[in-house]
View 1 (tube, one colour):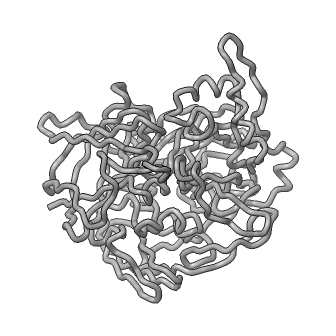
View 2: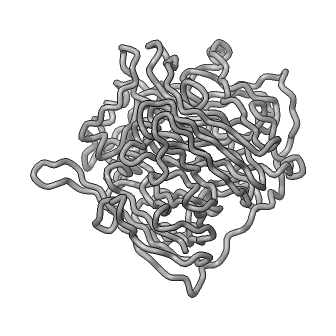
View 3: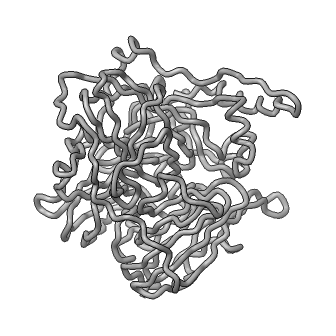
Length: 492
């Protein structure tokens, strides 16, 4: 749990003046080895494997969820009180149904699925209270960790915040051949990371002040799979962590407390050709990453995160974040892992070849488009304003149309804050960041990329989307999306 006082101490970084720097040892301590054994074990979402009969059902429902130290908070979820099951799909045809028992419209966006626009679940496919949406999904994409969440017009932030989200996995049954762990909840661990702001009266309020509108809604408590203060039990071998940043706005920069490497095996769009060793992993809202961690030495580990680069005095695009991190360590624990030698060990070494598709060269004939992510202060005290290329989102305006089967190069830029940029119905490759080579975790297939400055991506449009059911492109800081940092396009 993040300590409120420690978060507020970030403002003291203003004391760093020219000619003098002081290092304050404020790294938030993780639990000690003895304490780890007393913590409750992390639970995993139930697995809803649709491969057996080709169908799955979701019910959006209200509920109450036990929050740490304060009691039960009013929440919402799919098939349960908070969050939803892990939906597992494979290649082929699947029929899903989404029933809404809440008191307002919802949608279910299949974030990362390559499907036509009328199945995408964006704001053009609302599910009214009491209604059921039936959707046919034709899956023909590589194995990947995806997710699903509500995407209601101007209500995405509050609905996801209160629990309308879950993980979705595409599998092909070949992980044993690859040498990749795949036993759900044992050595293949779905981890939905969120931060929430909890009140003493047992509520989880979603009340946006000016800073929440500017930076996005962040909280003082870290939840993993809806739980805080839990420890995950792992076998004494290689373990696969499927990491999903399900937060509304917080950016995580993850690293192990004992400096053991994180072996990246997959990004948003699927597997890499081979594992990539990382010392830390940046994960912005909407992004997923799969990493392998070696626990064969039997030692526990705690994943820490550095402070969100959009928060605090360095927040405006994090211009001073590098300096501040050297002076003011605001790292905090996200999740601890402890080895349980009663769990079966299936893999004792890292795989050599994952079989993922390597990056392709930039297309010389690709059409180019530019997108500027705009935020500023409204006139006459109207608060912050958001848009793309100077225009706030309009549900009735189609911004452009691209030819089906085409490839384009998009240049996406921001001069304030870092923005996770997501495109529906596609996957892309990051060509460059600020004119240089992309970071290692951006060298695989992506559908969301953190834009700090300028980013070039190569996008292929392989599924149709009509003007009546277009795809979205937007900032995945949900408060920015709801406030207008979004556009829409057709593919025909």
